[in-house]
Image (cartoon, rainbow, N blue to C red):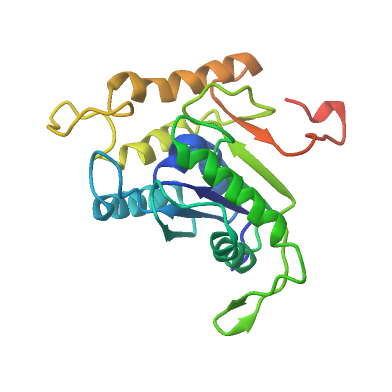
Amino acid sequence: MKLDILAIGAHPDDIELGCGATIAKEVHNGKKVGIIDLTRGELGTRGTAETRKSEAEDGARILGVVVRENMGFADGFFINDKAHQLELIRMIRKYQPEIVLCNAISDRHIDHGKGSQLASDACFLSGLTKIETEWDGKAQQQWRPKFVYHYIQWNTIEPDIVVDVSGFMDKKMEAVAAYKTQFFDPESKAPQTPISSKNFTDSIDYRARDLGRLIGTEHAEGFTVERYAAVKSLFDLV
């Protein structure tokens, strides 16, 4: 199955938080979008790998993506080496996305920066003909996505481009809320974490509102790029 967009996140919920509204908008526009989670989030303070799996399935259904897979890498301990790169290369070649969305280039959680670099390196290496991989016993063709964009997470990073996601924040917030064990729940007796407060949940909306304010829309999500962002005409700008 060929995808238009492949979103890659170190943990289940990274993608919903980082670019959920953008994905919802592109799905609405008829694009085929898939998600790959690198780990099961098994080291998370709240919930378990099993609850995260169920929550990720709900998040995928809400966003309308056509496929969601989990690489099963070790939460907190995966590294950007040949073995991990080859596994991700196989997935990139399997789905042949035009665009890859991946973790923030640097962030509070160490897996985010590692996941960002791993995904970026795998996208490049996937285009090299002398790297041979197989899927279902058949040799895969090389494939390099046209664009790699990095969504913004905990840290404040200035975006290179912003996407107007007005009208799609409700869908994003619904997908985030699917992770019931992770985020604000006044009835929960689980230990508090930096993302379980009401302030954090509220920040998802007001950060998108602030980016939207800066470009004259209701909501927006920001991304950093790996090359100059180009437009065919000055009139392409929103």
